[in-house]
Length: 80
Image (cartoon, rainbow, N blue to C red; front, side, top):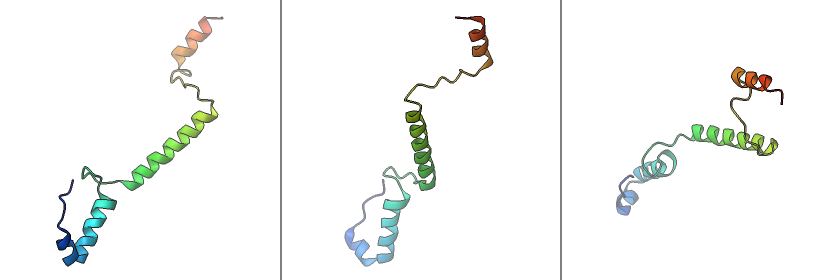
Protein backbone atom coordinates (compact mmCIF):
# COMPACT_ATOMS: atom_id res chain seq x y z
CA UNK A 1 0.00 0.00 0.00
CA UNK A 2 1.21 3.48 -0.78
CA UNK A 3 1.91 5.59 2.24
CA UNK A 4 -0.67 8.26 2.99
CA UNK A 5 0.23 11.73 1.81
CA UNK A 6 -0.22 14.90 3.80
CA UNK A 7 -3.32 16.73 2.53
CA UNK A 8 -1.51 20.07 2.66
CA UNK A 9 1.15 18.67 0.33
CA UNK A 10 -1.52 17.55 -2.13
CA UNK A 11 -3.23 20.95 -1.99
CA UNK A 12 0.07 22.72 -2.68
CA UNK A 13 0.87 20.46 -5.64
CA UNK A 14 -2.23 19.92 -7.79
CA UNK A 15 -0.36 17.93 -10.46
CA UNK A 16 1.03 15.55 -7.83
CA UNK A 17 -2.45 15.33 -6.32
CA UNK A 18 -3.85 14.26 -9.70
CA UNK A 19 -1.03 11.75 -10.19
CA UNK A 20 -1.45 10.29 -6.68
CA UNK A 21 -5.20 10.01 -7.11
CA UNK A 22 -4.81 8.32 -10.53
CA UNK A 23 -2.29 5.83 -9.14
CA UNK A 24 -4.34 4.94 -6.09
CA UNK A 25 -7.68 4.64 -7.89
CA UNK A 26 -6.93 3.54 -11.46
CA UNK A 27 -3.48 1.99 -11.71
CA UNK A 28 -2.76 0.14 -8.45
CA UNK A 29 -4.61 -2.43 -6.37
CA UNK A 30 -4.70 -1.99 -2.60
CA UNK A 31 -1.64 -4.26 -2.28
CA UNK A 32 0.25 -2.06 -4.81
CA UNK A 33 0.15 -4.63 -7.59
CA UNK A 34 -0.74 -3.12 -10.93
CA UNK A 35 -4.25 -3.35 -12.23
CA UNK A 36 -4.56 -5.02 -15.60
CA UNK A 37 -8.00 -3.79 -16.55
CA UNK A 38 -7.96 -5.31 -20.04
CA UNK A 39 -7.10 -8.75 -18.65
CA UNK A 40 -9.74 -8.38 -15.92
CA UNK A 41 -12.41 -7.49 -18.51
CA UNK A 42 -11.47 -10.50 -20.65
CA UNK A 43 -11.59 -12.84 -17.64
CA UNK A 44 -14.97 -11.46 -16.56
CA UNK A 45 -16.31 -11.89 -20.10
CA UNK A 46 -15.10 -15.50 -20.29
CA UNK A 47 -16.57 -16.22 -16.88
CA UNK A 48 -19.94 -14.84 -18.02
CA UNK A 49 -19.86 -16.92 -21.21
CA UNK A 50 -18.97 -20.08 -19.30
CA UNK A 51 -21.71 -19.41 -16.79
CA UNK A 52 -24.29 -18.93 -19.56
CA UNK A 53 -23.23 -22.16 -21.29
CA UNK A 54 -23.34 -24.04 -18.00
CA UNK A 55 -26.88 -22.81 -17.33
CA UNK A 56 -27.97 -23.71 -20.87
CA UNK A 57 -26.70 -27.24 -20.27
CA UNK A 58 -28.87 -27.43 -17.20
CA UNK A 59 -26.05 -27.08 -14.72
CA UNK A 60 -24.75 -30.56 -15.43
CA UNK A 61 -21.19 -31.47 -14.64
CA UNK A 62 -19.04 -31.91 -17.73
CA UNK A 63 -16.63 -34.83 -17.71
CA UNK A 64 -13.32 -34.09 -19.43
CA UNK A 65 -12.72 -37.67 -20.59
CA UNK A 66 -16.05 -38.41 -22.23
CA UNK A 67 -14.59 -38.26 -25.76
CA UNK A 68 -11.22 -39.86 -25.08
CA UNK A 69 -10.40 -43.15 -26.87
CA UNK A 70 -9.75 -44.92 -23.55
CA UNK A 71 -13.19 -43.99 -22.26
CA UNK A 72 -14.85 -44.91 -25.58
CA UNK A 73 -13.25 -48.37 -25.62
CA UNK A 74 -14.57 -49.08 -22.14
CA UNK A 75 -18.05 -48.10 -23.26
CA UNK A 76 -17.90 -50.37 -26.31
CA UNK A 77 -16.68 -53.38 -24.36
CA UNK A 78 -19.59 -53.12 -21.90
CA UNK A 79 -22.83 -53.56 -23.92
CA UNK A 80 -25.04 -52.70 -20.92
